[in-house]
Image 1: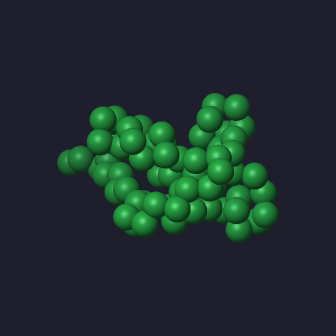
Image 2: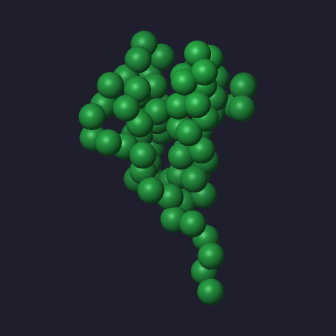
Length: 73
């Protein structure tokens, strides 16, 4: 039985990037959005988690810029 979760893109089709290249609609970085169709499901799951962490950071008034960059996650 395959129990792996299939990543679903958080993209809403309404790109609204901030000055740092983070979409304020789905919270994917523009780079993640560009790479989505070319990476493994595991990498997509990481991108989705990064997006969730960015959304949480924004709601708490914190910086989103280092989440998912390898320097702050």
